[in-house]
Image: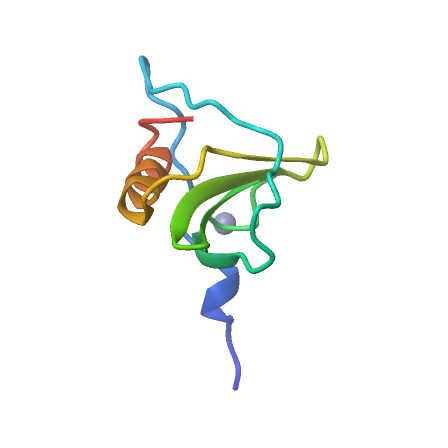
Length: 94
Ligand SMILES: [Zn+2]
């Protein structure tokens, strides 16, 4: 089948808005062996954000390919993590 594979392309995170929510980013915490990526931003940018699900909780993972760093938000209820992910997409949080 010709064409793009949709899974490789997600939305682009909007540039952060003035006064955006400043998230706290932590070193990855390997509490769960199985982490499922629910949704992610487009991989064409240097920094990708992934909405992840693990152990019944959710969090957002940030990968900076230029700096070769991976950080994640605190683990919360899935709905709260999805909200944070959407805020990142809209430039309302970083
Ligand atoms: Zn892109």
